[in-house]
Length: 311
Image (cartoon, rainbow, N blue to C red):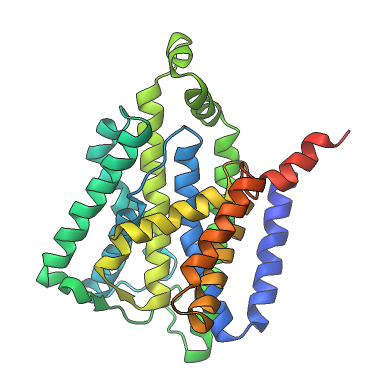
């Protein structure tokens, strides 16, 4: 067993042990942070190829609506199967747009994803069968067919989310180090040279877009399971902006940094909105400006820089 898998197993066990003793409100906060971190991890994957999407909120909403509808109409409530289904639905719905978006870079890619997101938001708001602008509620999930008591729900959702995060984190590290992951970095530096060497730029970017959609749908499904409610605001451009905020804060060098940045956002948003309800965005923006000024490559550059300097 390699060092990566050992570290992942230790993180999982430590997280489960710590989560068991946390109060319910903190379990919920960490669950939401990790779910949002999965969405932002998909953005990091695309950023490694030189593009920044502003439509991941719609992908998350697709996953959230999918699991809520399946729960309500089909009675499927398994906490492990629902996130996978949410990710699959988000990937399938966005698949027809992947070849088109793979052709664009820079501001054009960002604006196209934003436009698709706002079209989706408008459709969700106008669809009365989906609850319109108010959305609708989702009931309590089960764990492999077992009903959960009130005191078990928070920890179970935290444990399931942590399990998905650890597995996805390991797979993301392996993908970043794979041939396609390295080609993605090369595309950001010089697309023409990648084509000359026989690599397919559009195919690689399309696959990355689909993987990012899957991660967003999974994260959205986990968030809806924790909240117990879904509405069109999941797909609004401000939600996509928050996911981009986390990705920029983390940088593209570390998977762990994405999760830490998502936790920072959730903590700042929760406490600042409680004590400074009208100015918490100011504090968040100021923090981001400081990171961009002093850590332009994100929080992940802190420990990656130490690795590079080590003898």
